[in-house]
Image (tube, rainbow, N blue to C red):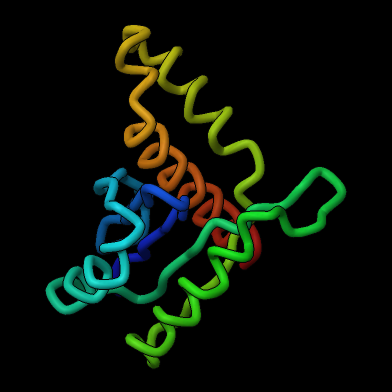
Length: 140
């Protein structure tokens, strides 16, 4: 069983999270500049056994894709070209930034640390991945 990698794609930064090899726990991995994310993922996949990649799907409250999709679609297309055998799925990412801020607050992080956007992106990717794992667990 391989790891699952999750992506919270943003125009400037991309939060990355990954499961353990048994796909039980989601952990934040890092934040990568958007311009470097495809190379980062390809490098990571070459070193680690990754089973699939989950990309946060930004939706509006009316269930329509958000404006961010115009950046995410080309990213996913490039990723599919570079990793043609890798399954890539979307997972709803609504409210992940809000939940990330709440987790930081609940975790007792100081205000300055909570303003760290890279950390918010990494935590958001972890939430996307944890939601995916929960959905997978209960849909079997």
